[in-house]
Image 1 (cartoon, rainbow over the protein chains, first blue to last red):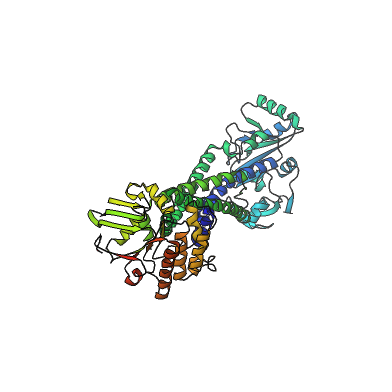
Image 2 (cartoon, each protein chain N blue to C red):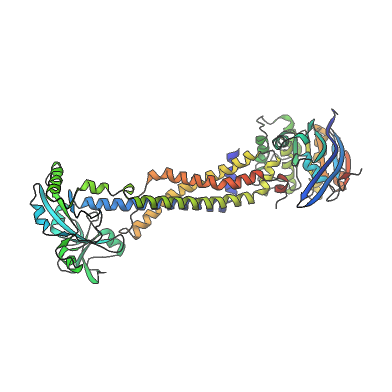
Length: 365
Length: 224
């Protein structure tokens, strides 16, 4: 009977019910989208690093994992030296230049990088032919609506798209290494060197050997690099996520609070009727709590569905800049956030309703 | 004493509106026998609604004694007055006060549910429903019913838990003459057939005339 009353109450005011569900869904979507973006972008970086096909990365000892941020601390003469090390089959140097977040321009030796990655598949166009040529991946091309022959202004220079490649190989935009070195005033310098090892079981030996012979440099296996691409390895990101979740709870709380507060006001007379029939304060609070918890569950489900929508929007509009992952592990957390907001938001209006004077409530118009 | 449903002695009720003290009841004495149909008549401000609220357990008295079906209302806690409203008293209001989200049947059922009354509808209540003539309107929501129909549902809801006392506050105040007479006839019928004790608050002398006895109030006192 109580559940029936709760459902009928919600059906009786479809606009308020719909707005409450949307409000809760908004905060749930906010949480899931932010978490999905952080996971998605880290995973995208991880996949592109993996797609480079390297087994070992040789870096400056002060360099961080990731894009390299535009620094070029290594001499490219290290490339032939490293290629002569035991078990190393290919060494490919890369110069990375940061552009507008989160993109960067990669200066590469296309032949070496392609061999290391097991081949780079061109979806249209082909390799570099002239200095102004640029290769972009399919996501960047889709986001910027580029085709072979399109022009891109970057670094005070106009580039011509010569090829569009499948995504997931190192970066999104590639130019010839010497051209980028010249443009960024880094002649003969590179950011890091990728090494391909003949057999996986020889990777530890290669790393150990390089660490011994080149103690001033950073040498890591690709697995070590990939493991660094996770939210819990980035303290600032963890704090950021906590702040966003906190803001979402606050937004959800305010919306549910306002919704339930107005619900109590709207139903003053009904609450008076229930009290006249002998309903206890606990009965009144019980009804309001069930109402808000049902709203929270419906809002959380809607919010989860909306997160698929935001993912689709990112994929269609800015696939190269933002990648949102669907995070089912966060669904129960999002539900808990919605329930917590609903619970807190109902507490004050619920207690207010429970304490309401029946005579005053019955005379309320 | 055993035949009295309501026994009131020197009942006083004082309200505080800010710093102002309002004496709503100034020493009321009243006895209502079991099975009696009493109308309490009076103008606005006479204290009749306050008496209704006290008898219904909606507000506590300030002083005096009020025994309802043997229970001393002055000694009741808030929780005990809630219990009184569940089982001992049934209310009929001027504005019907049906829950708009529920059908007529559900409005009756929720009163049973709140009272913890899990019994199947008994013959007595079936007779009430027949008297009320609601059988084909039970699945309708209040907004789809006329005022007279809504008031009949309210009467059914008030009687579903077999209260010792039926309290009616201006039950015909929102009804036209035809529906007013219908409702008042019903109340009289219920009183005669089922010996239901009824106290009806009204300012309308024609409505009051349907009762066995009329008690007049003025300025917080019973005057006749």
